[in-house]
Picture 1 (tube, rainbow, N blue to C red):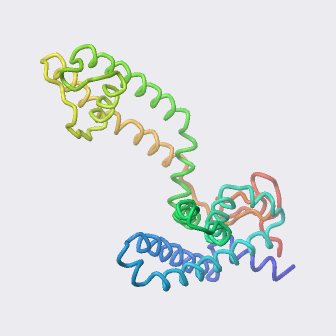
Picture 2 (picture 1 turned 90 degrees about the horizontal axis):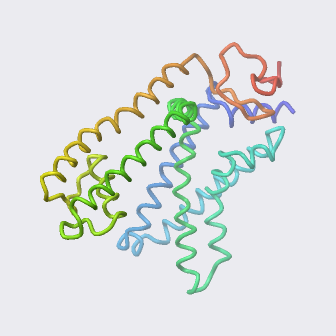
Picture 3 (picture 1 turned 180 degrees about the vertical axis):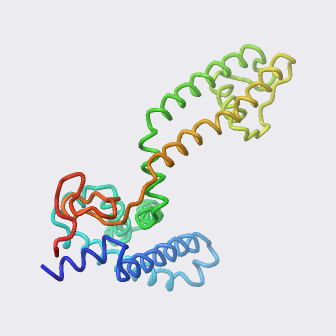
Length: 268
């Protein structure tokens, strides 16, 4: 039990030297894997060093498999971890390579390629080890209702503007349908401005100018919403993870989990 608790402290927490070293090692492995996936997509590199890349991929897969099994072994409720967000991400990190052994044959090459590309989901494992990423995720979740209302307003606005531009400009000026006009409204409002469709009439250009000005507010409003939630939710917490419910971000002086009431440190 003492060894299990020690492994839990190393794997799930980053407040100890061993935990920090474990997290840093995993970060480097994840980044190395992402680089391998990118290099593998380059035909010339894959042709010359494909075998080496394949071996390195299996080494990384085995490391992630051991990590995944250790996480299941040290938690009190394995299924809670397996079905959690990070548990699913950890499974996706190792599953594609093993599936490529089963799906063989020329007719399955595209399927294997698609499955192996799922390895990029390993980059989501990075968020587990970054305090800023956790804070941003919680701020986004706390402000979800405000963001949803804002996005609902923006969707209504681009539909109205797109429909209006379809009536004003018409197919002769590139606005061939209402969906294509809505596409123009989204591109214009987000200040991307591809230029593939542009208004020609004075009234259409006036509306386009107004949409461009509104576009700056579209960028600023959600930023302000999320920033306020980050400021409101910022407080002194640590990386301690409850061994019972896997809830994290506890206060530094916490002895029991604020979610399930379980003891955070089984050794004390």
